[in-house]
Length: 350
Ligand SMILES: *Cc1c(COP(=O)(O)O)cnc(C)c1O
Image 1 (tube, rainbow, N blue to C red):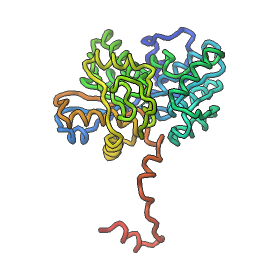
Image 2: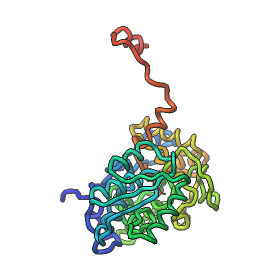
Image 3: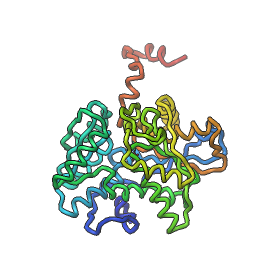
Image 4: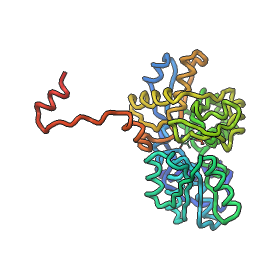
């Protein structure tokens, strides 16, 4: 059968209303890419894969949930959708709303959204509003407006987002024939870790596919789930996880605990170093997307985790193109040469 998106592929496993229609850009079906060099650098003797979610239609895993949330909204006659976003939710909501012919409004924290994400939301025709405040402030506003107006909320508080997102867990189990032993991912608003745990448990109930230990990873400057309290002014280069009050914090902690795993925090330096490491193996991911594997590396190097003999999957949640500034700003501009062969030879031959 021709691939037609996550809703079509896994509909019978999703707890969604019957009125949900298929609004798809053929999201999902992303590759599980082996990372043999990173595995060797961490001591070797285990299988390591990246689930590269940056290859979704708008460049992040948000598309898996958005196809379902928008399809549900369309099915009950909604005309306008709204979300608060650190960027990727905005681009995804804008794309799926455009696909469905809906009006889309996105609220973003002023000046805190990476260029590629803002451009996406604008390109797909959303009404973009900057809020003089944090993501958490923007989320509080959209929750309030959707209680007053006939506008559908498509943040991950919307339960159908998680139904769509859990399909990534199904895909991993289908590809590997069972669940991995260890599973790591970045944690921001904590919808994704919640969705993966739902997905792994559901697949285990159906197919005895097993359950992974989950390592959830936050950034040190935005680590409410590690600190045990909200962070008033979250700060990290990993803008997609710059969140101080995760909407699904309790569920994230429960997922980590039930799985026998944990939630840790890594520094921005560790995140950027892992971004470079992944790029050196051919995967360019945005900073937040490197956090999960940065957490794995930190645990292994600190001797807290021995991956030998395990099958490990790290989710790379979004594409590097989303945040080009983080690379170009830290890099000298490429040299300029006269258009002469001697100059080229001087520059490249050692
Ligand atoms: C949304 C997002 C996250 C965080 O996911 P949560 O569900 O908010 O925990 C991480 N990385 C990227 C690239 C994202 O877009």
